[in-house]
Image: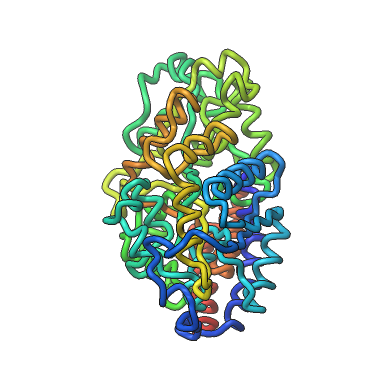
Length: 451
């Protein structure tokens, strides 16, 4: 599952990568003038010939064949082009990109997570500005979900090409809702809390929740922060150079999460894995489960779910609290993507390869081959997916913006403060004030490091 990368170890990686990228030079120290991306027109290569180097983190046998087949198809269509594709695993990629960055030997195309991980390449001058070809008003840009495109935007410029989509939803068992006398999805967080009480009375665990590795709770906080804190404040605080986390909405978000745990789950969740929680939803003991769209297939008969559940589930966003001060249209999630090396002498050709990889045909192939949603609009159809996945893609396209996973969008110090603090809220050992005091101290430390 994708979520395994978003963890405390990811925060440690982020720190190490920041050091490596800092060694590459401050913003503006790149030398694209020596044949680099900024000296080229990226709209189309003068001639489709040459060699493109590309590194992904999709070495898993379930995923690697897709990227191999698409790059091979590009070579067949453009026989003068050779693509040297290297695919490594999740952890090896983290080590490899750090070394390549420090030695200024990045490939023409390289993988990146959205958020501060991508922004570190931007700040170090290692990512080509792709706004002229994939900005929201360009022909290519208009083919993507706007929220996915925005996830790789920095200060109004586009630096990444989203390759997949993942968003967080609350799946629910329709039969359990009926048994508890609930007519449909709740319209607000307050209604959800009330529904949890009805479901518990009806004999269900309202929401299956396992937080053994910390990130499942962080996903709740990601969404609740987006609901409760104005977007401009949120963006300022998620930037390590300006973060303060003093807006009262952050405390409200933690208090609302505590209400969810109290009414809908259990304070023992820190000792339960996400997978064990999901099993309780699959076997009908729990009525809801907060999971990623990349996990939807596990709820289908094809994915091994019992028929009683596979035929009776739907999903909704975690509902927003009434009167919240943030963005009620934000949705927790993020695409993964590719960036183009700012020093690449073949940047236009690299862009052409990425355009090919995100055509309607290849986007649909992504969903059909490995079950991922593509950020290319209309790519999930009845022919290559199932109804809930198609609905998820339509819903993602309506999102005002992605609320990117808190443990990847923030500085590592802040992410770790949230991880440990929220575990304390679940167990009952910490209050929302304790959590935010720790986060504010971490933000102050991060600001000092950022200079």
